[in-house]
Image 1 (cartoon, rainbow, N blue to C red):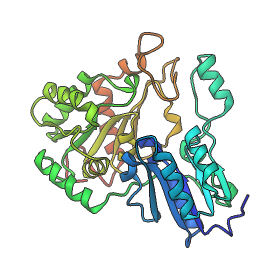
Image 2 (cartoon, one colour):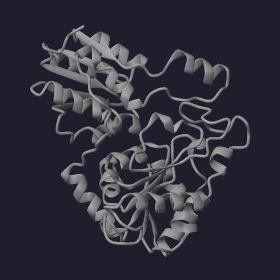
Image 3 (spheres, rainbow, N blue to C red):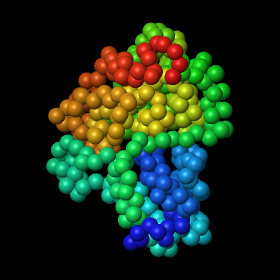
Image 4 (cartoon, rainbow, N blue to C red):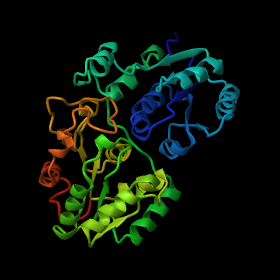
Amino acid sequence: MSDGRDIASVLVLRFSSVGDIVLTEPAVAALRDTFPDAAIGFAVKERFRDLVAFHPAISRVHTLGEGGGALPALVSEIRAASYSAVVDLHRSVRTARVVRASGIPVRTSYRKRELADTVRVRFLRRPFRASRLLVRRYLDALRPLGVEVPVRAPALYVGERDAAAGAALRERAGAPDGRFVAMVPGSVWATKRWPAERFAEVASRVASDPGLPVVLLGAPGERGLCEDVARTAGAGVTSLAGETTLGEMAAVISAARFFVGNDSGPTHMAMALEVPTVALFGPTDPGQFDFSRHALVYRDEACSACSFYGGERCRLGHWDCMQGIEPDDVLEAAEALFACREDIGELGEGGA
């Protein structure tokens, strides 16, 4: 393994998903700080390109498209770039194939979790408690390159076109900068989604008192969910779900007064954009993430966290970890969050 002195260029691999890619950013920044003259590339699935394309440290983005020929094409492109080191922050069968075929001489990867954790959660059905932050695990993968840095919060960068598109979307939704609330009621896994009717109640109360417009965001597949929430919540609540790219979504979120979301990619985006965030967790362990300057709503039931990623249904049939969260819990968390942020002020005052 290299001591880092011969690293002229380095490739970071993380194909998916939104939150995981956002959380690789401190590793990218650490590589730039350690190797200021090195070219840094990032390989990611095409649909997630916006999350890394505008990072000032990244020289080139390699994208994995859809279809049977996508992986060989990506490998060919990476081989032609002649990187001197590769950091696999995904560690899947697919990324392992890319690493092996790339011909890159110096290779390192992160460790997803301890074997004991896998046995405990998947076979013994016991709750998961993360031993380290996910960002720390990513940073630990850089140690063989001679990179030793403390944990810091991720950052997310928005491109100029996305910023302009986001401003137009906010104007259409009647959501002036710093004077609206962004909410994402969806998540990939059903057990991580707080009930839609409770999101609607929070949105309705925010829109009426302190009178902040609410903008709902989500993927195309969450359009129906967000439209239902908006319809139930009533006046002052608008859905833009399915109408934005990831970059445009980031641009909208970046101007919000605060953000409310489940354990999902957009929640990590909001925190990386330094938007005050209220995060709702249930079946997954929030101990994997740093909520400094943000608010976590988590009941920590005896059975939580029952899963690494979430699932389609509660295996015990009650779903208490999310059903037990009330709208007042979320609104009180938001109030407490703003009370702790003296530079922002009270919930209904001024801009962000």
